[in-house]
Amino acid sequence: MRAVVVLSGGLDSACAAAMLRGKELYGITFSYGQKGSREVPAARRMAKKLGMAGHKVADIGFMKSLYGSSNALTGGGVGVPGTFDYSIVVPARNAVFLSIAAAWAFSIGAGLVAYGAHSGDRPYPDCRPSFARRFGAALNAAESDGVRDGLRRRIEVWSPYMDGITKEELLRRGARRLGDAVFGTWSCYRGGRLHCGRCESCANRRGAFEAAGIRDRTRYAA
Image (cartoon, rainbow, N blue to C red; front, side, top):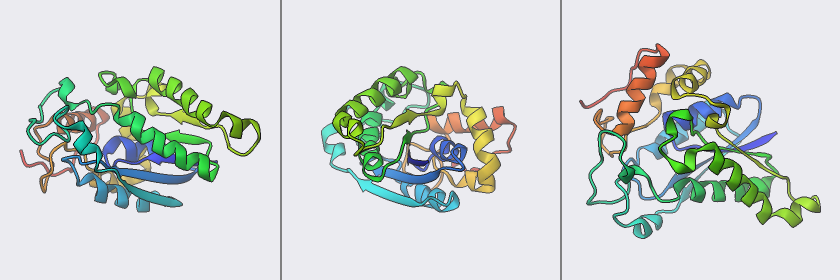
């Protein structure tokens, strides 16, 4: 089966893609004006490591102008917090990403669209299984006539969260396939040369390695 994976370049998406071993994988990465732009080259590395059949980087940088100061990940004047705060929720981000990924999936006959949400992502509404199921239904409704007539393949939207998988378990499973390449993923919300070690995402990354019992070889600035 073909599968389209939203591949951010971060730990979760790379490990989710690694879990889909055996499928013909197509990765899509979004450049949406995020401060953590080092995600994009990390995603390219992960796509090669995973032997993806195709990988696209979609430049949707215009989204930054739409988001304005609504969130800390794209807003220039908004500070990035060290713990969860709603300022790090980018409005409808996964809905935007999954819509584009699904358009590609329908076009190439892929039956699965995957993204890296896990059970620790509950604070984010567009990571929850209820969202994924409903959005998957909406996407299939958008192509219902094509599916009915056999011109399109019905898709399933899947995430590790939908199977109750935690971040540390996702990391364990992904690391078994990725090996040391897992340390080449990029999680930091800031755009420095190294992971800042202070933002909420860096804290979650550190915690996942510790909980998974894997020595963290990520280089942090602090």
